[in-house]
Image 1 (spheres, one colour):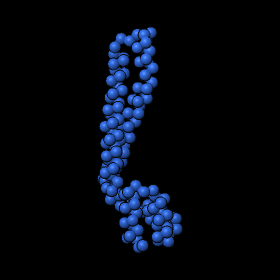
Image 2 (image 1 turned 45 degrees about the horizontal axis):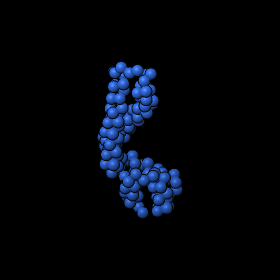
Image 3 (image 1 turned 60 degrees about the vertical axis):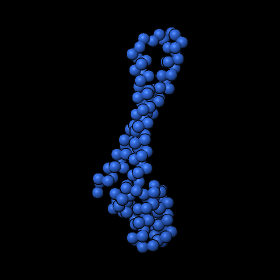
Image 4 (image 1 turned 180 degrees about the vertical axis):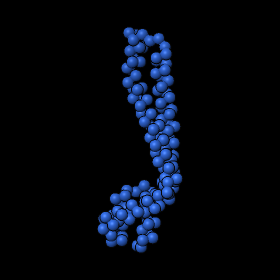
Length: 136
């Protein structure tokens, strides 16, 4: 395997989301390189061909990011509506209904935090992938 084939191999494998260490092992076996040399080659290819690697990775990451964003927003809005309803109406904590609603507040608060985390992770994941297109 020559240098050009190795570069294409690394771009293809990183584009398929394969583990960096497995790529390095494959380079060591195919090219007879040491670990440090293969690792430097992978880092060099990643820095030089970052845009093409991102183009190969982007469809699945962007779909997952947008999916997390949409589901997280829906989940957050659903749970926020519970809190808006609870705090805007008159509740008697001594009634059975009031006690059950207080009990479910723990579930709703956790669900709200999970929804917010989903929104943030969807934005961050999509942003990192999209920003690779614009970085040289």
